[in-house]
Amino acid sequence: MESIDLQNVTDRAIQLLEKLISFPVLGGESNLSISQYIEDVFKEHDIDYHQVFNEDKDKVSLHCRIGPAVDGGTILSGHTDVVSVEGQPWTRKTFELTRENGKLYGRGTADMKGFLACCLAMIPRLQQAPLKRPIYFAFSYDEEIGCLAGPALIEHIIASYTEKPAYAIIGEPSSMQTINAEKGIGMFTTTITSSAAHSSEIRTSVSAINEATYLIQWLNGRMEKLLHEGKIDERFDPPHTTIHVGTIKGGTAVNIVADNCSFEWDIRNIPSDDIQEIIDEFEAYCREREQLNSSTNSDFSISTQANFPVVLSLNTPENEHIVTMVNQWTYTDVPGTVAFGSEAGQYAAAGFKTVVCGPGNMAQGHRADEYIAISQLKKCLSFIDKLMTSQIE
Ligand SMILES: [Zn+2]
Image (cartoon, rainbow, N blue to C red; front, side, top):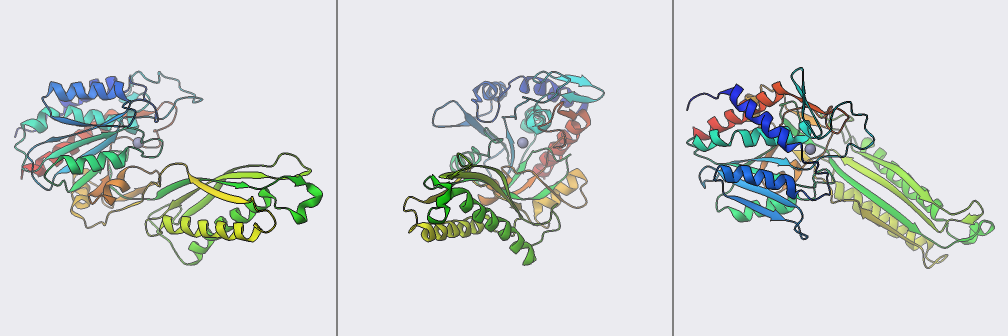
């Protein structure tokens, strides 16, 4: 194949990005506007694509294959939603592309429509290539509110193709460096319900606030215990699992024993710590506290809800083929880790060897004046080109 005309493809990617960021689809909102646009691009190139709708049919994930129905292909994964710009001190337009000094400003340029634009801009070249193994695109919604669409999309991919893809590359902004490990994330709300009484009756009633303090101490103690046991993964900063309570609400007045208290907390686990084990142990402790208080107050209860399904950690070994290849294509010496969660753990759990690698930097994502450097788009386009070349050999 002729070598890539990088300038030409970059111009195309910028045009696509300009369009993609004009759809202000936030996590949780209908993404039909942006997905319709992407579908039009697919149609323009005669690509057969699949839709994976939510129950209300107002959100849709898309996936497609370019190349032959042969095992061992690679999925390029992205999301179509972005985070809100509310309350952020933007000095440039938020959902319109501003080009300045080699940078492209606008919500979603880095996280992660720059990657989507690169994928779409490469379609004609991928279609011309005599691919021996296929390349897939998988674009989701509701990623920013807890990677909600990932599991159904992945399931649909597995069901839709007779062949089995082997690898997944998640194009979250990593400055085009290989990321092979991510912490997992769980966020929860724990609610304690008791009965109100006069504050003088504290010895014969159960204060929901007092109970919350026991539970919070338990959570703190659990984190310390992990550290004590030497559960350390130096690739991360901090190099251990964290458990943290971020909000607390409870009680009605200073002279009333609190009949309610709730608090929100999160776990960010290193891959070697089992997040479910911690959750199960916490639940067991809650049942213990209920039991203990049941004779004083038969209505006493503690319940914990996950704010969204646990975002799984990622830990793809450094010697996996996909890691060494992506290292080569991106000139990465040692694969790194990132502090944010993504759909990567979901792809890994489904059996795909997975890494994160995408243009732009998360230092700019989610912030005011989010931008992506045009040089990053170029690196991403060359990267997809190298992936393509490896699928021809
Ligand atoms: Zn993202």
